[in-house]
Length: 216
Image 1 (cartoon, rainbow, N blue to C red):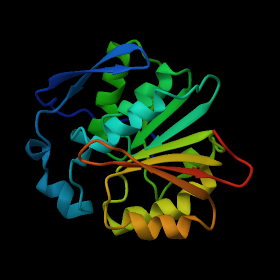
Image 2: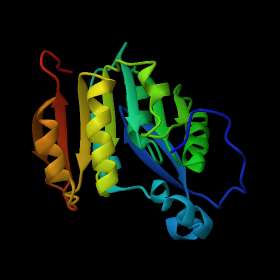
Image 3: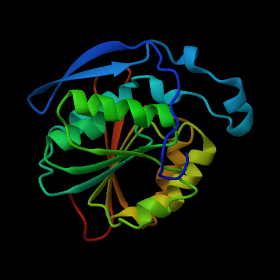
C-alpha cells in the first residue's frame, strides 16, 4: 500500500477475460491468468508483498453480488484492498461515487482499464492503510467495502484501527480467515455486527458493520 500518486508503468502481463452479470449489466473483467506468475522476490523481501490482488477470490464475487442488490444512488463508497475491483464496479453501476484503493500499483492500473472498457465511472488510487490520510480527508464515507481482507494479523490490526475513522457503515466479505473472529469481536466496540453466511461453496460470510445510528 502506498500514498495516492503517480503509478510507474510496468510491463503488462498477459490477461484473460471473464464476464459477470452485475446490476443487470454484463461486466467484462480482464485479469492475470495466474497470480503466481506475478511474484516478485524483491518486492516480497522489501514488504512481504504477494500479488493476492490478481486472484478473483470468492469473497470478491460474493461482495459484488451483494453490492449489486443495493440502491447506492448518491452514496460515496470506498473499497479497501480492492484487487480486481469487482465490488467497486458493482457499486458504481448501482449509482455510487466510488473510490477503489489497493497498495498494488498493478491492481489500480488494471481496475482503471476495466472500468473504462466497461463504461463505468470510478476512481482507483494506490493507498496504504498505515498512511490513510488521503482516505481520511474525504471521510466520512457512506459505505466502506472489503473482500477477504483479514488473511494476515497485521491486516486485521490495521483495519480495526482504520474502519471507525472512515465512516458509519461497512460491508465485509470473509471466507473464514483465522484472524476474522478476533477482529469481529474487537470491532464490536465501534460497530454493531450482523453476519450472514452464504450457501454456496466455498462459503463466504457477509458482515455488515453499522455504527450507532447508521444503516445502509
